[in-house]
Structure formats: structure tokens, C-alpha cells
Length: 262
Image 1 (cartoon, helix red, strand yellow):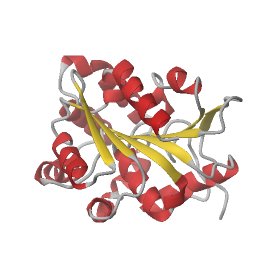
Image 2 (cartoon, helix red, strand yellow):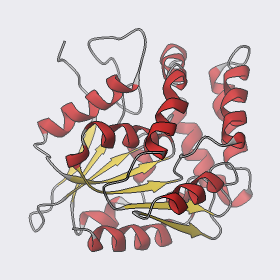
Image 3 (tube, rainbow, N blue to C red):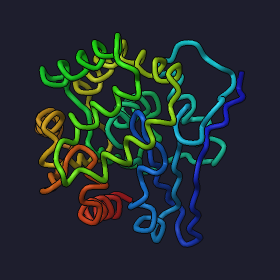
Image 4 (cartoon, rainbow, N blue to C red):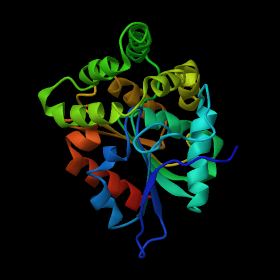
């Protein structure tokens, strides 16, 4: 039952004992962080994870018919244990922020700090509509069309073109069966968001959001206003995948934050 083989990419820095762990979003992969690697490996040990079914994390054993957040966080914990990582900074993107929320509630001593890029927090009306639309279109649209459609809804402008292309290319690697397993996580999605939103945040957290992230920015503002431990930074000229749209600004903000919370 223990056999899990998530694909990971690790960068070792002999001058540092600190780790930064990167968790991508649904449909993503380690390629999500292509613009962060060089900036961060100069200061930290890095661990990039392909979540099950994503990137090169294929044919994971044992095969599971139905996914839940316990399964996903257990996958991540196995990788961290293999690498002997007891504490780390975490950088997440989009749906990865929800996985991080679950991970932090189950293993609070694990988190030195957390950075939520394009974070998903309070389930406001717009987010609920977005999720319900996704579930509705799943009934009759092929999943590859789904990813193409929602990439334009999330990243509609010309300046989001590179983010959109990277997202679409990586999402194509999910099989229809695997895609539906991940869609099944939405049964827990809103309950998890609500639980995290209303609990005390006991670690330093930074939400970095694109000013053009019209679906998720409002909830990030409400989250940071509610929690003193959470800082919100908005990036001009960036949408949902702000770590690609304006990666130089993102890297400066993220590095400053991790340096301040060693």
C-alpha cells in the first residue's frame, strides 16, 4: 500500500539547510515553476513535485478509484519524508494553494512560511459559479475542451498568452479517467476552504495575486483582511498565473518574504 512514485525534481544548495517546496495547481506540473528555479536555487534547496497523474507522475501505485484530499496530502508527505524534509517554505499555485491549506492543517509544524500564487481562499459567489460551471460543462464537453475553455476564462487577455499556453500544454497530459478523479475532489473543496478560512493561521503567509485575476482576487483580499499573519501583494499586468505573467516581480516578492521568515 506504500508504493507511490511521484516524480520530483530536486536542486541541492550546499550553502543552505532550508528547503522550498513547490506545489503546482490542477492540470499543471513542475514546468509551472520554470521561471522560479534559477532565482531560488541560489539561496535554497528546492523540491518540485508533480502531483499524481500530472507531468511525469504517471501510473501511480496502488491505483485508487476515487480521490480525496487525504490521498493527495499523503502523497506529498511521502515525498517529503523520503527527502527527510521536516520543515519547509511552501510556494503554491492556484489549486495547489488548497492542497497546501489541507497540508498545513494536518501537519502545522511542517510549514516555515507559505506563499500562495493565485491563491484560492474564501468560496465567494463568483468562485462558486465558476466551480459549478466547470462541473456542468463536464457533463458533455471532452475534458481537453474543458481545459482550453477554462484557460481562457481564467487568463483572458493577450498578456496572459504564455501562461495560457503552458497551462494548456501541461493539462493535455492528464487522461480523461484521471481528470475525472481530480474533478471528484470538488466534493470536499468548499468544506476545506471554509475550515481553513475560519481557523487561526499560525505561520507567515503571503498571497501574491495578479490584479487581473478577476475570479480569485476578491477572496484573497477578504482572507488577508481577516488574518493578520497573511500579507497580500498585487502585481500589475498579471492574471491568475502571476508567477509566469510577471515572474521577475513575483520572484522578488517571494524571495524577500522567504528571506524575512527563515
